[in-house]
Length: 114
Image (cartoon, rainbow, N blue to C red; front, side, top):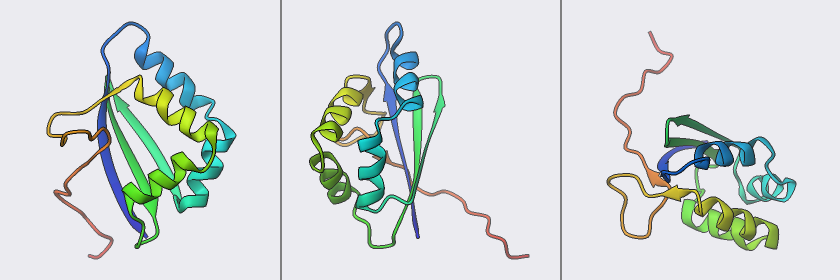
């Protein structure tokens, strides 16, 4: 299993955070099915004010760009969901051009060994 951590910011504006969170409390079934079908084993999103962090568990050979492209293309509802979510999102500091969800660099890991 491979763990990916990505971050992005929500746009400023009245109701943006609330709307984004409301959508994720009622994720469309096609989106959940598609994410599982492309290899996402677990996905969590955490928020601090407008900053989001996504924790994504996938098989070791999972390619983020390819997997999410297959997800968006898998069903018109998935493409619609992704387009809708992009209306709330903006790149975080340090993102490359055209990048929204931006990989985070590991800094420290404490494993279970004594």
